[in-house]
Length: 460
Ligand SMILES: [Zn+2]
Image (cartoon, rainbow, N blue to C red; front, side, top):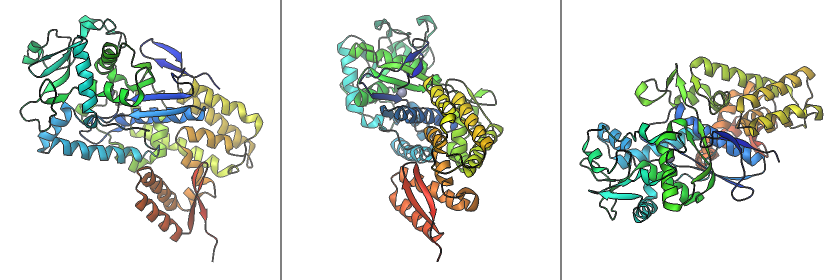
């Protein structure tokens, strides 16, 4: 097996992935706070860590990928209040839409998708442990983490204590007076006027802070000391620094072995955030460009780098997808690829093994395509399918496997994709209906090892 190296934010180095349990990798990535529909920036970590799971499975590892849903949070209360809606109902609706939108990527679901609202018991136990061990204190129904009690604090984000701001309101607020130290952050927030949900706790009714939610959800599913903790680079401080501190303080252990952070998606040079106003919603981009183009766009940049977003970038990605489609149409479907082209295929996987370098891997994939094109028809597409599958682009090969379905009957190709989306969402009724529709158009779906393919029905 290849050695797999990943960049660890804490050590600042590439580190070999040595699973805590031999052969089994646990990944926790921070998911969305569900107060509105997700944009392309929220989709990036979903894609990066879903594809990392594919690659690790390709390398023979068992992988458990956890991406949580933050459904109890200040932003949700604020959005619900502004819209005159019930906060729990808003969070539930946006969770359903988040699943629908990410299903459209065709990457399947994470292995676990815990909700903060369903982890309240373990969160309360966790906070109690922190109080019992002297790392937290209750004041007027709030509970705060005593940052200076954790000697490792700042290790992940490489910040000095003097330069830290927990981002919990303005420095003159009453909140600051309740804290022993301005560095301390909230583990539990007492119920406030205008908040329509709260849970009972030994310190009074209220709700958990964001950071403790993730420490508890991760530990529930993966234990402590799991292999990879991921998320956007905007979460390094304070969110991940605080998660790490909570685990050290409560369990005397590090939460994760490797901290992996993806760069931000930038909209004309500015970090894409709700406040920027230029919002590229994932479902709109999927509708206008299709999942293959969206995935191609995301893998065309190294996950750690910022990625510029524009229509032009998407068009470039679409052209790269077309080049692959064209190549597949000329290749011998399902056939083994020439042995002497194997180094190009190996270079693809070696690039992924070296800090999941998808742009370098893509370059090797296109070297392979160029060489196949040069040799003319008859080259088997086996290696190309294997590479595409790891990038979540296996559907390109499946659709082309039996004649150029995308070219001769693009509607059938689109229907097949919709069926895959429905099946991923476990909407089997819709999936069955689409199968019937395809039969009526003269196409039969057969599920093969490379995914489903369309086969023409014999003529009358
Ligand atoms: Zn988190």
